[in-house]
Amino acid sequence: MPQMEPPILRICSLVWLCFCIIHLLGANWPPRS
Image (cartoon, rainbow, N blue to C red):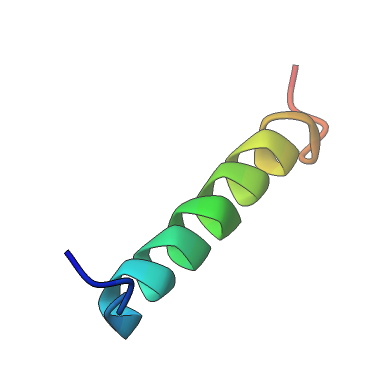
């Protein structure tokens, strides 16, 4: 397998990272008890 990573994988990785960060922030962001 050549080291030619399709952009889809990179986009998926970025989206997953953003989703995780937003989820972590959203869990403590809204001051909802």
